Image (cartoon, rainbow, N blue to C red; front, top):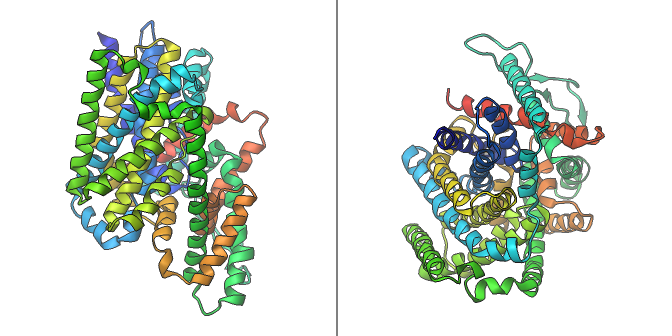
Length: 536
């Protein structure tokens, strides 16, 4: 009896933990690393102290539940803050009523997450059994749990955790005691290169961003560095020599809007190709009838009842927020198609490409329907939550398949992860945004700002937009992610330096994976310290 009770307790605790960490990371940086491996390492330490024979099953179940909270927090952090940048007065009115704010976000998470789970249930037989896709994150988590030597890596995570925590305490102080590590250091007093002024080199919460950069590796370091250098060598000179009548901040936003349009256009043009390949490979079977495991009468009835409840709840929620019947149908159908395609890609390469598909659904909706800003943001967030949850659910089902865990038991824990996240995420977001204002250096929300630039593109100088579009297109040709380059252009330089420094560190070690547990601990402690700072 002790194991189920312990599992339920730590499922709740670590799901809230994962939601809190990824809520901050998704709004503070332009990346969203998978939280499941870190949860596994923490759970290994916890169950080392609990005398149970079978530790594999509870750890796998806890990690799968907490991972749902992590991916939902990432999806919300990428899209939901767009409402602040698009309609700040409205957003702040919501913030004045914590219950209203938490209910709105929690309700969106519940209906979109449930829709994603239902689609995952529908696609599971096809993707896991028939096509036998790898779902790499699921395999990684299973291997971590199964490997006995992972306990050493858990201790390394704890060393990183407490090292980062000690750094934060020594810098920020505690219980009225002043910190002894400076928050910033000026290296070049009064130094300038043209219009560029050397900023003070900041150290506040730097280990957190070093950790994010290390875990993400060159995939984030290179484009961010390109973005910073582009601002110094391309954007600012272009503004000074050719558009001197336009203020630098306005020029930068228009230029970046052009980059966002280029990235969105490329994603929309690529999407039909992905769909065609998916349908050609047999994905059409998903939409032509119920999956094979639903062929039995009792399973068919259960699946249909679930669909009625999930879709009915989504329609009720969307109606409450003023969506018309046609717009509701458009959102549900396009979300289902995009979510399935996200799951196929995640099954092959282990990445959940949330932003591209959200843009694909959002942009046509801008022209097809008369939507207000809340509805536009809800569309993007709905797609990201649904797609992210479906991918994560199938990662968990892969773990269950490999470890022999009952499918129904895994489903129960994953449903619990969704419900716990829906109950706590609104509170977490409210606390973070109240303490660290959106758009500040601690909660920059670069992904949300980029989406707002797409919405506001029509108000910018057309020529500057075109220049940014061409630049974004060239970045695509050079295989750089324009959205990450955008982070280097828009983010405060000290954040970019910290992320690039972390990415560079990953290139200096022979085996990056050997050091990931330590930096995962740093990552967890830094994020938690920021979350707890919002409580005091």
